[in-house]
Amino acid sequence: MFSRTLLVTGLLTLSTAVGAQRPLKVYISVDMEGIGGVVTNEQLGPTGFEYQRARQFMTDEVNAAIQGARDAGATQILVSDSHGNGQNILIDQLPNDVTIIRAWPRPLMMMEGIDSTFDAALFIGYHSGTSNVNGVRAHTMSSATLTGVALNGTQVPEGGINAAIAGHFGVPIVMISGDDAAIEEVRRFTGPIEGAQVKRAISFHSAATMTPKAAAELVRQRAKAGVERRGSFKPYRLGSSIAVEISFKHYRAAEIVAYLPNVTRVNAHTIRFVGRDIVEVSRFLEFLNTYQPDLTP
Image 1 (cartoon, rainbow, N blue to C red):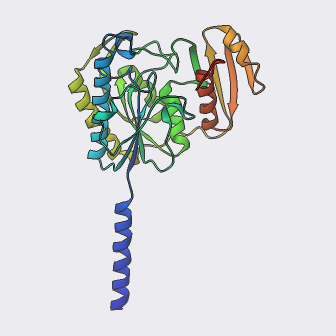
Image 2 (cartoon, helix red, strand yellow; image 1 turned 60 degrees about the vertical axis):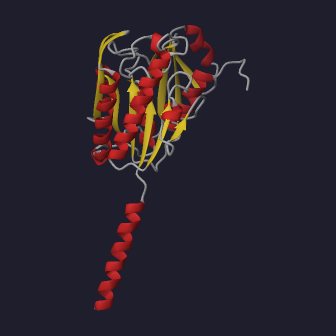
Image 3 (tube, rainbow, N blue to C red; image 1 turned 90 degrees about the vertical axis):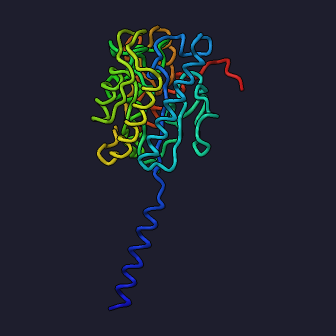
């Protein structure tokens, strides 16, 4: 009896030790339009006079999200720089043990690198979708070319697409930062996840915003809370055979894309593609956004 008790105790101790060694992996997808203080093109691209400052604001919020996740026990973190050219975050200011996804193209777009080993995902600096009448810089994937993206008949913002990609791998979205419109919209797909509202949208190019330091502190708090509550949130799953409908501003793009044998034209400006799953849909969307005949290395 004595030896059996020791054996059971030893096995329980070993099991606990193994469990304690399991990494807590967090994925952080980062856009720029939803960063505190960012409101116009002057902050969003290299030609804007405030872009370099906005890159710092973005980097500070990323570091805040990383620290918040670590406050909640995260041991491995992957950051996806998912705005513009994908080279916005000042990566030399991030912790040395963080991995960063940069530049394009990527088969999983803003969620490249995610897989079933992750425990939670965070959306930082997100904006609302192109069909939303509210929100700073509201658009889906391309403000220049697209007027709508729908999955299985439902209009989705980038956050909805990305939540579905995470859900495909069984990963819940636990937190989002951005303006009030972006947070409200993403919660329609993810449920009542933690939200860091760093600004209130007034118009497409105007907002009442927190200061960068205050925004970063709020992001840290909500990131910590989200990761701590990860068991309360369910992955957003779409399953198999997913129909994506993409509406273009100009009819000629829809006309040409419909020449592909696996694409049908819904109307003058809209095409439909049916993928086996959201991963196949993601690859198709990345193709549409990236391909041009004069591509070179």
